[in-house]
Length: 393
Image (cartoon, rainbow, N blue to C red; front, side, top):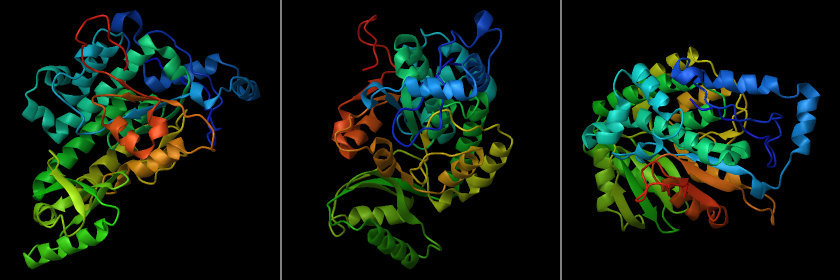
């Protein structure tokens, strides 16, 4: 996997990291004969530097203005497409990542990503691992083409399953172990979604829209239809005036039919199989909790923000607890963007890179914080129209 290294944390409130990341060449020495753990690489990088107070002093001397720092955003389910990853295979380590993924998953993920069929890639159990691996492969591209982006990284955040990729990048989890946890998570969520006819509805509303009241009335409608304990709740906070509401299909249909009453200007059903990030996903909680108990998790080497409370992860137990809670909790992405980019007036914003398929997180960032978005770049995972012009843009 990648031999990534992060620079000392340089933005306000993130002084816990006093280590310089370094590029150490390929993480698969000997042409792929030995698959090194990402966490091992990071620990060896730490050992190579100045220990204790010397490292802390070196970090303080190396502080840079925020504009010179970078933020990495990792996308989630829904950003995938057939053909993703094709533009990444030329970079060192990427094919080895997909070979290891095939061993962990038990199927050829690379072929599924490149060739489809789309219906299979769309399945939750397949697309979550696919987005996870493609995102970290995009980091390898950055490591090869623009290593300074990783060396000056100051924050990472991932949308839903993207949080696992962010934690691997930050040295908190091993690639293979995190991928196995994603596999278990995806399969459990797929099974839970098949148990109840449910879905997710993207909503854009006027300022006066009351989403929680609309959900309450939708649940009452379902009760009149004879549905016991109906679910209809906000599952994603995207940007101002935009929410994703998830729950029973009958509730979502009711909201679409009564959109004007609730001041919804646009509604659209999302192409997903279930009501993710609601209590309908409770059957998926225990399988993920069990696998995370057996997964080595360390404190991230850079700040990583949680979807559950939009705050920075503090320690390994904190990560383990919130990754499980995330399955049945709304994704506070809008709030997370405010946390990541909060700064004193007049302070410049860091450069932001979306690593993984699509540009959805960039579009959301533009709605949340226009000034931060002006420093945004998407790292493409497909081949460019003309070979040799492939950049992270």
